[in-house]
Length: 50
Image (cartoon, rainbow, N blue to C red):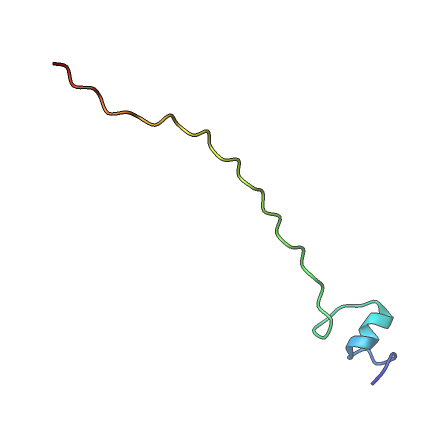
């Protein structure tokens, strides 16, 4: 159980390998921020004709 043991995490680090005890890190998903839509002009109520 040390640097020479290929089944331990420390042994994987020394050997430079990956496995169950030392999984490879997956890249985090890149989230692209959406641009806000241009605000539409507020509609005013139609004025009633007299």
